[in-house]
Length: 223
Image: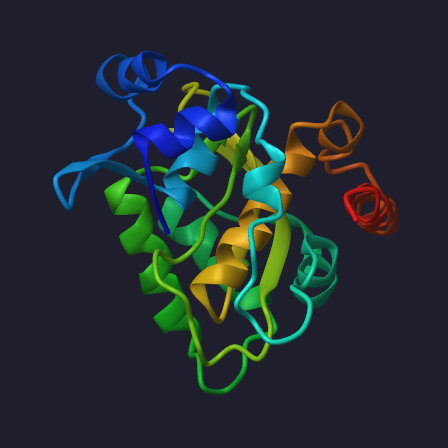
């Protein structure tokens, strides 16, 4: 989904000129579509998180065209799993190790998802700052019956070209079957990472059950 400058300014309750300055001076990704500047929702989420700007409720609960209720991030994380001490000397080897841990269906070979993740990283790093990256394919993967999110703690921090220049030690690897579900899950993750009580749990010593329970608790509060 693409948002115009006016739509972004209304959602964030700021002026059009401020949004235009974010685009021209602060790197908010935008392009020309149908004669005006527009920004992909996914890129806006990532930029807001990197610049510590709260994600508005409109982006967390936009109207759904999916049948039934949208899945929660906690559900996707429980499905994907939380893993520790993954090896990796660079992006490729770390992402390879992460993909090998994901419970992918037979219709999605590990190499297919790995290549999608690497293609996304070549466009722009998914390192959102504070040692966290959110690798994900740019396009949905309709072969998935439900979204997957895996939290992978690396054996050693790696250079990831993150927005703040810090090495990355935690990967939230995500994949979803539709664009709507992808944006929904991504928005929920960014919302959680903005909360100190959740962000403080994203360290290798935290039990997986505690991370999952806090994600469920905070998402339930949104309903």
